[in-house]
Image 1 (spheres, rainbow, N blue to C red):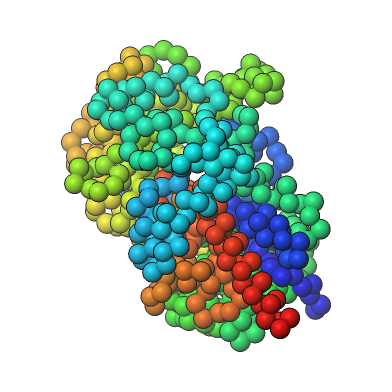
Image 2 (image 1 turned 180 degrees about the vertical axis):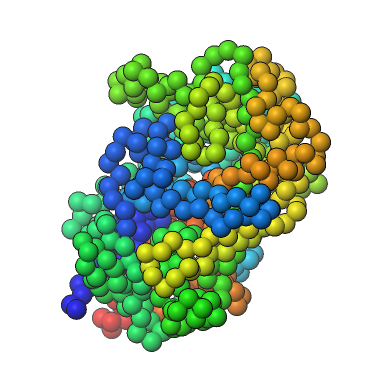
Length: 535
């Protein structure tokens, strides 16, 4: 089997893979191949912000679900993951959040690399950003990733901010600025009312470059290894098994697919690999371990009057979007937010809220049927851990995902407090005039014992899995602080799986930042190698 050869092959065209492809091919001497298992992102369900959930459970979604979660009423929790160009940045809620400065300082401490500290990653965030507010101490302008304020925010979103202020929370116009705590409207990865994914920002502008090849419908089945060096990948495309050689192999499949591919390649916990019939090439026990996710719990109210966003999908709504790119279809659904602490003794916020002027129930499994308002309390500093494991040596089988939800009681107690705080906000200010009876968990559930059970019954995912190939220097780390897989030369992981801990916020922007730093590291590596070869 003959194999083409590239300088770099990137597995996965999600948020990280797109950013890598865009940055690496700025150097015309580097030949880069991107392999994406999914297809095109050119569809209105991707471009129209409010249609984000319409790609769930379709061919543009890996359509994962967890194993039954004992602490969450033995339910399987749905985990959508983008299976198309742009990956999850093509079906997420477009919220632009970096996380707290303390998150990155913790990364630097855990990895021993000051390059991951907040002071060092802030320039990367600014480099990648084109903020509609312009450049400032905390923001960049002119970068590939467009970031804008909501174009046509719903009146209830403004009302909830005012109610949060009336409840005693500070107003915060910029969650990515000097402080994270407080209430405000989220900034979004949008450009003039349409989604602006990592594919829009990085990949599509680069596709005209002669040194970039992008192949969709290509599912990678294993990393090719010669001894302790990665030499390329094997993949299936058009029904044929193919191979490609590369000087650097970069896995950017995300927190589920990347550990799965490593284990399919014989890199992972030896005992588990033997159990499923995979030959062990390199015993790396941390692969698939340490999985973390942000759990959320919705509180939903009926409303006294007014129209929720579910009425935005109308001839008038479409006319506004196709005309001026305004109106309800520009909404990301979760327009307003709040950061606060479940315990005043905490040094940083551990709760984030997503307020939706629509009924959001069972992760949009069914369309909203009534006008309603949803407050999602999200735990952003989690103590619980889960894992990703193989079910089979067959690469077409979905892996077994154990989210580990609420395995640490501290997470449960924080989410109960989160529901209580949501109720407090709903009871004051302008929002109190909008909301009627509480539909879920229901006003009759008032004790903490009753709310604990409600949290277990209604907990869902905010779709932020990380940490399954975490970086570090200890025995359980999968990659080093430069994102190189321990013990395997020529192989890197560049995606959310390398995060040693979850950031306090939505993970798309941090994932792109990781790719920005990785592009610098890879180019430095390849440049040094070329210099050595010429010498």
